[in-house]
Image (cartoon, rainbow, N blue to C red; front, top):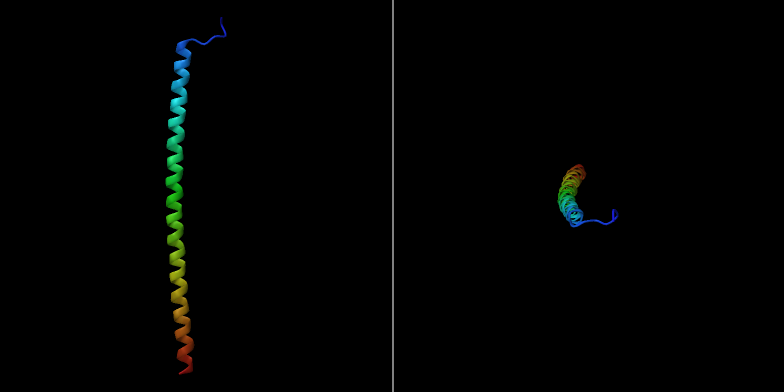
Length: 69
């Protein structure tokens, strides 16, 4: 009967699985938050790039039109 697990062993195993599940939930939530932050930062970088391109295009167009007059 050495191979049989007693109730104490099963309780310990359940606690280990519970702790592991909680750990995985926390890690998953942190990864989702990190991904969200990265998406927001990416959107801001894209918008800043668009703004810079718009300003550069405006300045170039103004310079070209200024030469004609």
